[in-house]
Image (tube, rainbow, N blue to C red; front, side, top):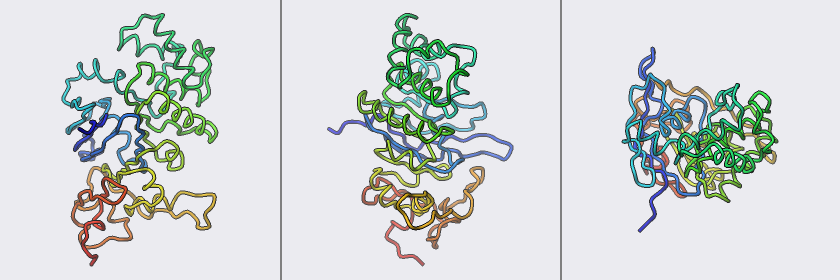
Length: 324
């Protein structure tokens, strides 16, 4: 019998009420994450990546119009839990979250050691002494000296603050950690240092990661699989090797062509046009207006097709029908 994936997301929808109408930020997402695996969610700003993280962790704003689907954690649909049960059994205990801006996630008037220890005290009922001891351990794990436990967030660099937030997510030893743009606004050397630390944690602890980013180069360091997101949907899902070596979806090809490379004679190419409004997405393929391969059938919404090395490519080019 095949082992169940650690996380299985099925037909997940997260819509918001706004003055412009209902924004379909996450619109029918399907994906899985295995134990000890790193799934990278790539895509342009505004495609729904951060909303996907919020939906999985149920850290939601007040204007939610719809949150539906199934989020199975080790076979149990935790999206069906009421808020109290989800907080008590899932959030921080089995799933951790590293927010996009580390400074905003930290209380400026509380020492970072106390903030890192807090999830263990609140969610696991640990004593203050045990939580402080564990905070020292995770500080070492993320590459921060224990001397920094007594400092305030404003006394740390951006890279140090990012490591502190990572330590906060790891202190309760969750099975899965969601990282929302963990290296944004950091210099290249600090980005590389944090990615190397994540690879070490994944290797030594077997922690699973969902890395949400628009940085193709950085994501390739950690990825086992890639989910490419566009206008609220996953348009390509498969192995990182297949994606970075030979992307299948037209958007994936253009995205990879836009990335500058050291050993490449061709200049990076910009993707023409703009993503559609998530308040009024087109009825057919959402990438059609920007796609150089557009044809008649793109007026219909494509399902996901299996392609070599990929679990799903949401494009009619792979349906076997000749182009008009």
